[in-house]
Every structure is written in C-alpha cells, then in structure tokens.
Length: 105
Image (cartoon, rainbow, N blue to C red):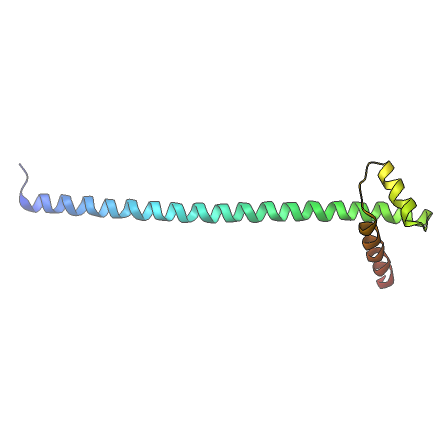
C-alpha cells in the first residue's frame, strides 16, 4: 500500500501530465490553424501567379497580333479562332498596358 505522501506525489504528477497534455493539444490546434493559413496563402499566391502568367502569355500573343493588325475586333477574332476566349475590353486593357510599357522602354 502507498503512503499518503506517495499518493499526493502521484496525483501531482498526473495533474502535471494532464496540464501538459492540454497545453500540447492547444499548441497542436494553434499550429494546425497556422498551417491552414499558410496553405491558403500558398494557394492564393499560386492562383495569382498562374493568372499573371496567363496574362503575360496573352499579352505576348496579343502584341504579336497587334503588329499585324490595327483592328481590335480582328485581333479578338484571331485569338478566338485559336481557342483563346478574350473579351474586347480585356484586349483593349492589355493593348493599353502594352503601349504604356513601350513608352517606358
């Protein structure tokens, strides 16, 4: 049989382990939330990077087409024929961006 002092020491150890386990669970949840935020940020950055890459590709393609034609509707039709679905407004916005970039260079 255990003495009262041993029982008290055992209870204190169990309470300490219980407290450590609670702290570990709390820390694990906190780390999981941080991981989820980091993954969300990564997905968002990847999406933005892909979007910027597609816009650059489109701008390059549009620049090539604009050198051959001044008619924005004709350019839109040529891009659509290649499977690129781009609105006239998007083409105009990209053309303005390209022209302003040429002014800088």
